[in-house]
Image 1: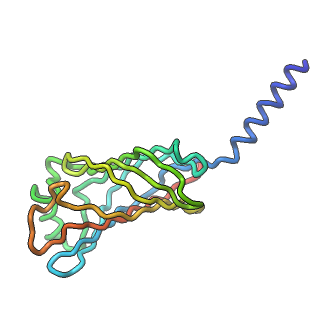
Image 2: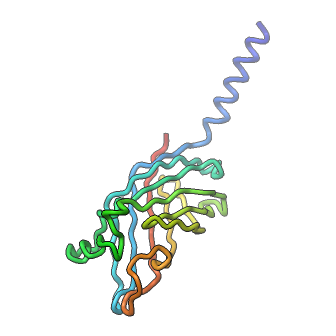
Image 3: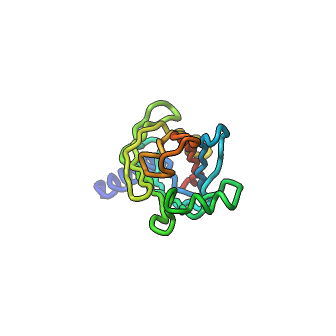
Length: 176
């Protein structure tokens, strides 16, 4: 009888101790980008983003993030340019319909900040990227980083188009 009471008390203690850790999962997200072209900044986004995110701010090292972007959903506000960017010289959507991002590791850096290492795959080429990630208690997870488009064979050699692409990721997570 005493053992049974201790077991119940121990179980309640574990449930109480672990319930203070909030677990979050993906609800919605956006991927925006900007690049210099002919001296002007061209901005756009991808409108179809899917992700599986499991994240606990108190246990960042256990986080898992896998995201994919439908390359055909590129949107720069100019339909003709979007169709051009879908061709083989750029995203080659017929052959590579998805861009993927997979978390390798996440470590806490500050109260809201984390250092992330991701594997980014564009046009079948994978590169490891390191960049900071911020998390707000409202469930917003965001990051900004820059890639060299040539590393992924996007756009070829160009005298007018910049090489560096600034990318802004934003995900709204929901507490579960």
